[in-house]
Image 1 (cartoon, rainbow, N blue to C red):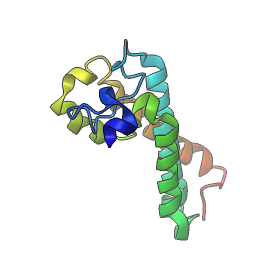
Image 2: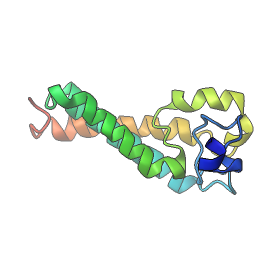
Image 3: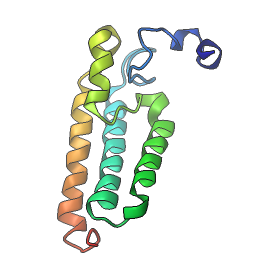
Image 4: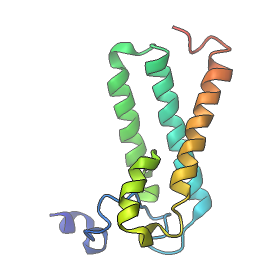
Length: 136
């Protein structure tokens, strides 16, 4: 069924579960600047939503669905391009099994999410909290 839906080249059993997209270098040379930027932005967005919904308590009854919808939107929007890792641990396991697929772009999936999450934390702390936006 996966072969019918995704095509034979996308259903290699070794690559299933890997966080690889068209910018990752699987279908040609890795395009690292857009790959890095998109991974950073989607992790930034996810972390900012988590901080605003859960940490500040603003969306207490709806925090889970809001965070889940953010993950879904990131996967649908950026998944075909980057694989939508948003988490270094999500990339690490499949990369251990098949490093060749990640050879050109492995570092992006570790650096960009860390910088994106740190950026969201800085914006939350130094911009939103200072202006009272993040307060309950």
